[in-house]
Image 1 (cartoon, rainbow, N blue to C red):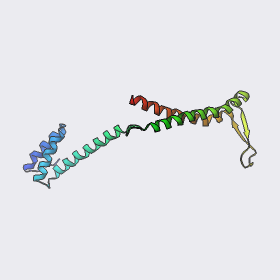
Image 2: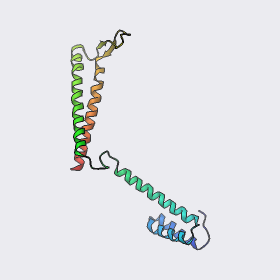
Image 3: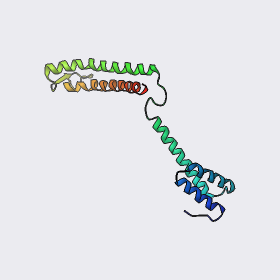
Length: 160
């Protein structure tokens, strides 16, 4: 760092020392006083800008840490929790109802057996689908319902 010769040189050195020691408030007072006396002091402006930048990034980190959860930014309405619960239970019930036909087919024919389905346009004459692939949608619905119920559970445990 290049040192300027003059009356502000000792002040800026002291401000740098204080700032590096973790005493940013005292360093800011010294820098502000120096900038009032010498508005063109580049080192003082650079130190002030550095302090401003670090304060801003620390504030942003704190804010992001505080708002890191879906329900943390504000108090969640009971209607939202009820809606999530209904969606979760409904998704699980839908998954169970979608599982009935593949389970009965799998028990009757074997889960590795293929079923033939006519396609909508009649071009290929039919599509061969293994029975176990019919579980894709129920698994997705189980997952979505479980995640919705888990969100409600986690929020209720956090608030109690």
